[in-house]
Length: 189
Image 1 (cartoon, helix red, strand yellow):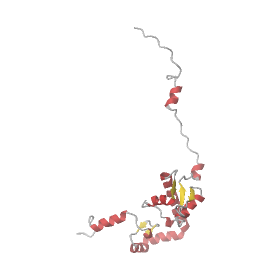
Image 2 (cartoon, rainbow, N blue to C red):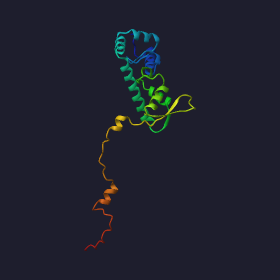
Image 3 (tube, helix red, strand yellow):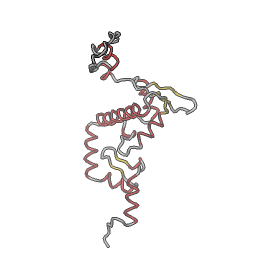
Image 4 (cartoon, rainbow, N blue to C red):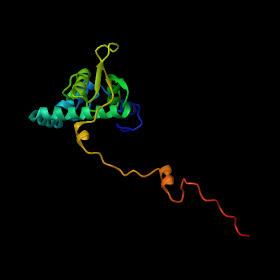
């Protein structure tokens, strides 16, 4: 039997492990590679591809961290707009929904060290209404009514023609007038 059989218990276990989320500690955001254990992560860090990515990062780290931060912010706010548009929701609830996606941008690779810092940033920039609740300790609760960004607010909205409704058409139609019709004459025999 071959070493890499498809239906062996080991191969099945490996596929099951690879399907779910792994430890954040062994994730490389630059390479977007998840390793299963410390040894795998160490081997990845020694690889030529990772070394090239780290050289690129070393040339302009602020640009790369800024890019990851923008992507994280955009995806987080999109999720809030879709799932919790006009409701108050704890920031941890939205974050847990966000990280359920396997291919999300990890907060470790952004400019914010904690979720609290990120939510306070959203409040300062006016993108969300943020309030600190005593029930959740120091965890902020954000009211998920994201305000439109300055780009969308300054953009003129497209106007669409409005068509008259059925009741408006029937009122203005000459065939269906609301005026009383003249009495009908008897038909000839």
